[in-house]
Figure (cartoon, rainbow, N blue to C red):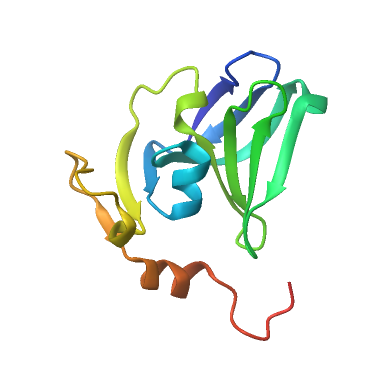
Length: 141
């Protein structure tokens, strides 16, 4: 784990987090709309807002996930799944991205035509992602 810092585009929200040295890429339609392309997240723990907590917005985007953003400039800051206990900070919001490499791609069957990473990564289809992340029917939310 590496301690990294990040911030939104306008600088009103800043954070610190312990991150893994890998990048996850998601092509689901929600991420495409949210990130205006693909979402690249870096798995993180011990996320703490260090500036602008009152400017941080959070929206519940599915039955299992929520997304954080700056209320002023709209920058994407994180994606988290509270039930799974996992979170990723937005790659582009990090102050230093050295040493980070793509390791997995989610919803590869939803990848826009012509998009491809040069890196060799694990890939999961929509069906595989839903089976892994979505709550079982009947589970209490």
